[in-house]
Image (cartoon, rainbow, N blue to C red; front, side, top):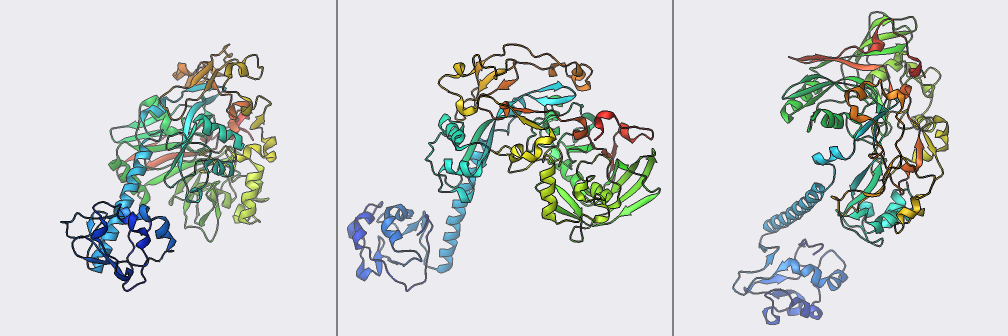
Length: 594
């Protein structure tokens, strides 16, 4: 037996010498020394008069001698008036087919039990109730929708390669965003737990262990443009998504996403995804309000029963009339979200039609007949008319001609390396999230010297989190010029008590001046409560990101002239207003120029 599951081997077989372990056998329920015999060690007799062979398992003999008591209790001995031996409560059968059936049933029960345990743990994971929407709130500053930093619990189940290792060793190796001393502090403070229970640094991880780490979370700003509802019914929500806004929580975006804003500002919750738009793409987006409607429309899109029309503004004078591109598109890297035209790609078809030309750039109507990743942008790049402010496909990283005709002139590996080294991975590549950066890690790119000129992250000298003394928190922050005065100083509650509020070490000492740039903001006009509040702005002495000065993204980093305009199904149609940049005489604002 191994791990509690019986292993049957053909008879005849070798036999185990068991006399030395008779005392352990007698410790089993309903088992007395006189109730069994071991003639020549080939079999033993149990109550009921039946004889059972002692089979040699395909395991080292020492497994029996070292684990006799651990494994034998899986054999449940019957009372003297019972017909025979039971295995996990099942009668021991005579036929091999029945034996296999019993083994499969036992294995099924073990898997079922593991699933129930996993489901119970998942039910305790944060972020699956209405409480998540109240974790924090928004404020508007300089044309940006921002999120007050908040405490959030990242969770992940133990990976197979971690089993048997010490928890501190795993974090030191796998999550290198912080020094090992920081993870040791989190474990000892109870903000890094296993199955929501505090452990010590010597704890060895097991299968199905749920790791939870509470962090002070900072989100990336987006443009402060309201979401406009186009259609609202009992079955469907249709809206005009602003650019810069991801659809779902991912990476460094959670509250600054369409689904969270709809829940917080319109009380539209539990929406079902029908399709998606890239973060920088604006336009028509649909959600189902029940599973049936979502499946219906999703199936129509998958079966290509839905005509989709996008508009974009491209560099140069696009040819008049209709132009069709049928070049296959291949994903170069799912991790950073980059594609190219390739003979190894999937079949792809897009139809283009010029709408107007202002002497420098053209507005083009796009009809994608397939739904490949970045299909419109990649086909326009191939034709030599990339979207004019596409931060990815309108760049010389794809070669001198910016990928025109599929001519890149470098390997995929070199292209990916150049993309990451030249630009900030989130702002430039427009990633909707990355699994390696969205759990316990902060982005490794923040420390990349190559990003120094991008103006996105500027470290500042301050009290490092390891200098914070939990025994004397007030003394560490009093009269410290590096600790901000216009926010609330907090520490997280232990994760073992998730209902507790953060610990307030010091209230704000002064109010920050409100930028004059916010008074004419459309979102702020609609939601007056989005003015900055020092009471809601939290600062944690142990938070790395609280001590890093992030420069606000510019409008040119958050806008791309690609818009989902019309979706038309078999018996329905929705359309948004055309964006201002689609007008024939439009001129690009100075703040959106690259």
